[in-house]
Image 1 (cartoon, rainbow, N blue to C red):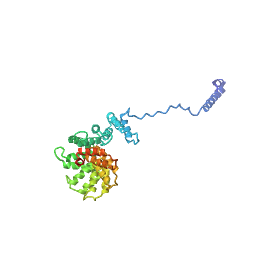
Image 2: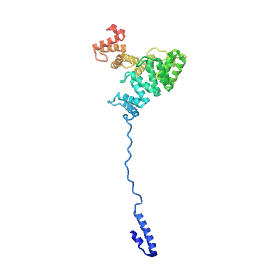
Image 3: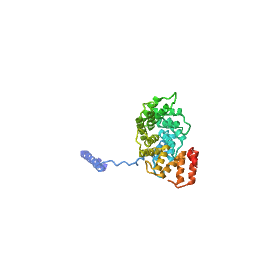
Image 4: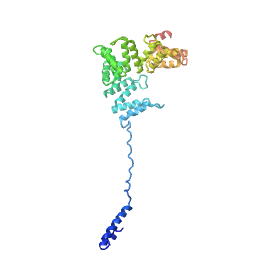
Length: 354
């Protein structure tokens, strides 16, 4: 209502009516307005920050590397995981990434096998207090992989690994002590380290300890205990333990019964872990069809990489298969070349048969 109306009434009536009408006007105005205030203008939803990428953040390289390593597609790159791990290690000081590069490089027969690189990145991981990296470097020094064997350096890294909680490091340190590292053989200390390693899950510790029980060195001689420890080592993925168990079942042993089928299964497991002895013995069993179904083509497939790695006997045996066309297409020239390689590799039987 216009404000002039409120001011134009005379006398008391003016005061009363003016107050009443003006109050009523205010009430009507309030009633006619919305009961709630108008909504505030909406602002756009905040954009989530972009996930870090390897290009910007070295620590993100590790996650990308893991995905690349676990990739099972036909287009998988075998070099990309190592490249990404290396970037995370070098720029992000990511200890686990350093270890992964070292492991990929240390894998014998792997596409990225490079012993020197394995040692280099293993040391980087160890410097970052990563016990498994220290253990890997200790093994490389102990086995002389990538350089000459060095027991002093092996013991140094094995001690760091063991102190850091690596059972594998304790196993290597135990073997070194038993071998006379330092002032002389420290048998008692070596046995304790191997027992600790085996208890904490290091298959190598169980295997080495089995040898001590078999010989009665530092412990009471016990063939049954030795067998059980060897089985424990094989179950844990120790190739040599599986091979020796296979030999026990394949030959005469007072601890286990002769069982060619079980022996073949153990050689199969040993071969899958890539030592030459298990694959060679398995190949012979496949050729003879003893304890396992005969499979000459598979035997030839097992012998070929063994020959390439320098095993002279495997070259000669593969030469026999090419000469007879057994499991492979007959190729007299290739057979002759393989037997020549066997002879040059000190397999004297094939020198006489050329």
